Image (cartoon, rainbow, N blue to C red):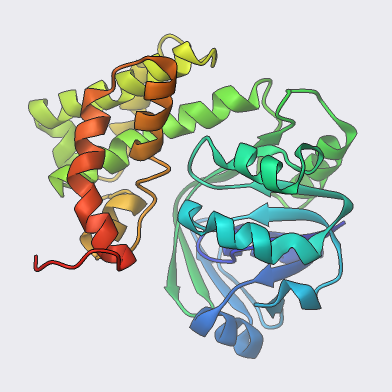
Length: 313
């Protein structure tokens, strides 16, 4: 099975490296200084599960120079997805499957619309990792995990084959009974924490300890839960309690990726996170006042990061 990792950054690079380490045929799609380092020195992984170095990897920024693959893991930021869909087409053959490992609930359907529903599975990843430098990825927390499955929840042969490949590489992987429920469960967590973190500029420890910000976090989760219910997504009734219990285990100094992007003036995933809650809430007739406040408040900074609005901070 030939696999392309489209976006070999903190998440894609880690999982790609584990597959390469296990002898799987993998091509890494990357760019910039990270790509130069991959070509020259290979890929270095520092991980709580053990460090290793891959002195030689197949890496490129030009998918047209890569032969057709069996699987594409899409690991870019959600705002990069339109460009990615265009760029990845040379990788897609009649039987290629595409698994997005993005933060959000809309990307599988956006990919299915662009590439054809028969190519796309739902997918998500859980890992705390970062690019420490060009060609160097640090995995600093959480058991690396991938969940994926057919969007209609059929237990397909192609999904079973991919599961076997991931397990052979020592990656914790699962085909959940309901991939859409799994996607929304992660969405409820990352979007709530990212939005409250971005608006408060506070780390996880402060957000969960201050009663007012803790209530904001719970309210943000509840709004997503109500939208999910309205869209017939079967989230567990105790998901907010369980998610808050998980938040209480996280490192106090931790921050969400969207929060870091906004603070550092980079384009963020706010449109597919809190913005998606607002859109889907409007479609479903569910009021989401906190997410609306978060999205509207952060939108000027997002537009500035995108270069479409200029103003002094």
